[in-house]
Image (cartoon, rainbow, N blue to C red):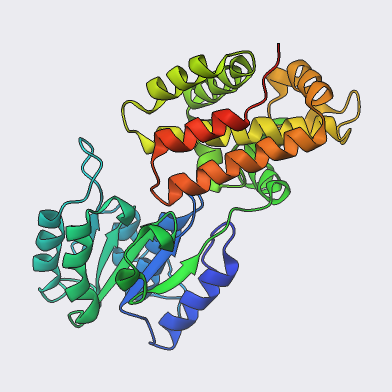
Length: 336
């Protein structure tokens, strides 16, 4: 009997022990890339801490009233705070409203649980406002924060939370799970596992929303187009790409390009033998990938892979997106 989650077994075991021993912390930070399972793990913990019929200590039954309502995000003692869809920020007023609700005793469950999603979207004043609650949490209240990385939050926030750093699964492990749990064909499971970078949530998003896969392929095609662009044209492309300030979109673009250059590395290293293209994530572009691998070579492909990873890290650290991509364009090979 376990928490029935894919991956992060160590984190689930730790949280289970905290519940079983009645040693739950007042605040946890689930840090990791989007789609890695931060929200799912936090909600399972909320169920475990409030389950009325646990089959084992620290294991939620997922069928009692509390578990069912938390699963549906409809529990009276579960508060969810996330960014405003219009401006993609969490404002101080929203934090103060949350604090007012947390000051009340639990209505139905043993604990009031606040789930603060993508708290890196909180303004500095909103993060500072939360500090008082983190320092002097009301009784029977647990705060669950999610963020891409601890580095994108104020150090004073991070220091007051138990930090759980979540990592994506190995693509092979995710591919096997997609076949076993979701009954996907082997080729499709392997492709989604690689395209998602081992992130379960992202793989399922791509599977359930074909338009996302189409957009991914469009960004791959644009990555090839960049190879023949002059510097001025590349910078104009970056300006257009970053104009709306949508960092989630930029992260998806960079993830697509990362999958491209990893494929080129495979091709350049002759790790994908002729006729066995299944190890490539972007099979639709197999011919172009092989040609690019041959023309650039392994060192250049590895350098581009590292450059995209560096840009992704900078994006997670909230650095200037346009500047990050302009620097990336300087590292992008030019083919005549």
